[in-house]
Image (tube, rainbow over all chains, first blue to last red):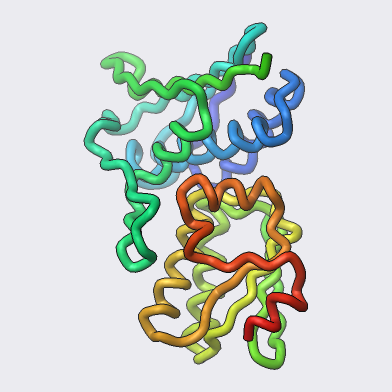
Length: 137
Length: 112
């Protein structure tokens, strides 16, 4: 298990990506799965900055990665505003250009790309987002 | 680190991007695209050959430019040299249907 804490800024997204990609490659994921994990984590961190903290450099994102024989589990913790995923409508990905909505895309990407996405809020820890990607059997 | 190179072609502007397109770098691309459109250049080819990552915020930057061009009823933004991995993120959210993708620059330029 590895835990690393990053300041919640857009500039750190590249560092966070490198941290996650290195672990996913070492864990033996295919290049498309590594890219999927990289995208999901980037969307998660961008959402934390944009919506939990509301802007950059307000707090931290603590990322814990745990590898097992079957999967990679990534837990992101922040101390921003409680996140309510059920309040975010799913985007209509078939609507024409003029009607495309921007809100909700991050969660949509996470749910499409990962095998498990769960949100919880702890009074002591803050927002806890758990993302799991299964290894191919 | 992302870099942007703009080259004026005979009937279009070629915007070659390298590196990573995420929430940090997307605003820079937005400014470049806004500037091109404000200068009455409406045919835009985006070359993503050297882009190794594209997030939803990056895709939305291109969506906004395409929407602006459509509202003005002038020109179009198209892509060239998009890797399968980068294209997969366009496909996931259905954005592949609102852009044209070309395999090489010659084919993209013929569009204009």
